Amino acid sequence: MPLFIGNCSKALTNRMIDGYTLYYRDSEDTTKREWFIADRLGVRFYDFCVKEAKVILEYDGAKWHPTQEQVHEFGDELMEVTNISYKEKYAIDAAKRSKAEEKGFTVYTIRSDYTQTQVKAIIEKFIDQVRKNGRVE
Image 1 (cartoon, rainbow, N blue to C red):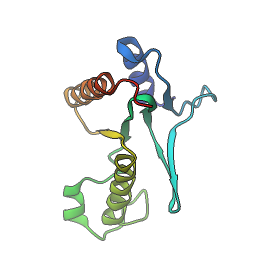
Image 2: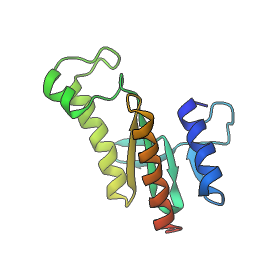
Image 3: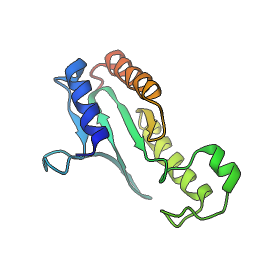
Image 4: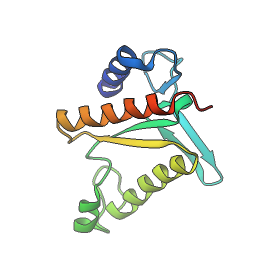
């Protein structure tokens, strides 16, 4: 299990998520699966989802997911790890987020280059949103 997901699932379960269905990938537990949304253009997988509350938490590795600032700076240059341009990868990420939002999900994103303070603040917002939404199935 990626450390991020492990830490989030433990923190969230300990705080208030018991009783909800958590969707996330866990290489050590094959019963765990990421939430996905499929349409005619393909399938989009999401890192951590509380389906009943329609809330998603994405983890973006800074190497794999460019910021808007990087798109402005590097634009059509190819990203080393993805072999597609910064602009194209940013558009793919934005489309993934938009698809979830179109389906009624609230999406929060944590980046690997965020500080612990930033991460904690986003997780708190995520928890607040789950509590607010409750079970909306």
